[in-house]
Image 1 (cartoon, rainbow, N blue to C red):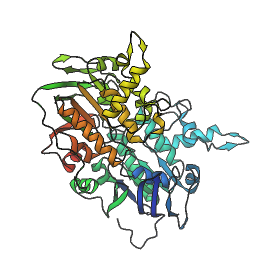
Image 2 (cartoon, helix red, strand yellow):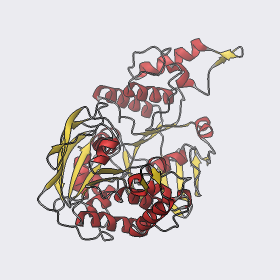
Image 3 (cartoon, rainbow, N blue to C red):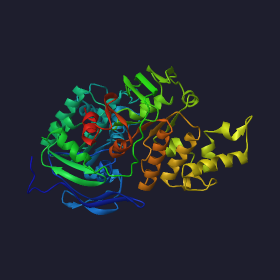
Image 4 (tube, helix red, strand yellow):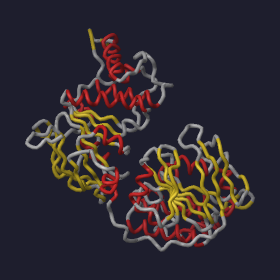
Length: 497
């Protein structure tokens, strides 16, 4: 489909977005025309969601201009965007479980009659929206208890009732099965015929080839390529998404021993986040886990750390079954987890650095249940120096940079001298200097014979630090690549399988 000569319904020109000193979008130009589907692609963190949130009024740009249907467009909030005819369906479900389906579809814009909510009208229109998506369910039913797939379809039905002229769909099929996806695609074709413009974000590249008219590729906050067709080999799209150099801040890889330290056999999650996962990690090996959003990576390492339940399979350490049922089980066996969200799960922000380090090491700072202030200070300060934390022990964690907060989380667990270290997104949101020092810590652990498992959405990172890489897609293990055979394209092909 070509739109040369046509006036776009939406235009972005030189859009920048910064959070403090960090610029996350660098001069984005984008045009969307009526009746077309534009796939917005890129790795995790490429800037797709930020662009979408700016268009839908959730985030304000730092600079640049937008026009909507020929007029200046600068929504201050999502309500202004909706009123203009721009709707967004978020990847995260945003329904209210205690309300009915109809109430969720019309929340904030209930049809009124005589000063009261016109429930008959509301439920009739909701039923029509559900019917269009092939969802045979009463609009009076509460959302609570519905499957994730049905909730996703209700989010889509909600957008359909807006009569929007532009829809942004962020991973709309992530929770849908094959038949539900076909129904959605039929509806998208109908919307296109009605002149609705659609921005479609998905990691399912074969799906993009079916539904999109054009492809826009983002990388590291910039628009790097635009294709005027979606009828392209998957390899071409992947290379555009990941085409960056691998020069480095990564230390040389340590050579692991031949001894298997940790082994995972047939591991499955009761919630279905992952299933039949099998791998082993040797002493001194850095084992990467790669995959896209929803692949089950975080849930897998949380299960190994005892933080999430395991329904099937075993975790063995030195040949002994130690399958954990709680974090305490894992910690006592020498397995520790540096979690994905350091602010919510890693540090107590209002407490001092020393206290944060002590929380995982009471047996080292206390005796017979009593904590010695002198021993606490000595122990914490020793580990602050050991891991290069920039700050005083008495300083609050909230006063530190993200990189130093992450070093505190790492320090508090490595002070236990663990045998297996699980790192989930260890450098997310931190600067290059801090990243480099964290890589040094990781390689230092491997050199000491520790088994290190690292989950990262940064493909360059997982390729740069790992001896081997396990790739996951939608909860399935799709392959394990040796460092010598792993590259951007081979990992992404397995991640989108």
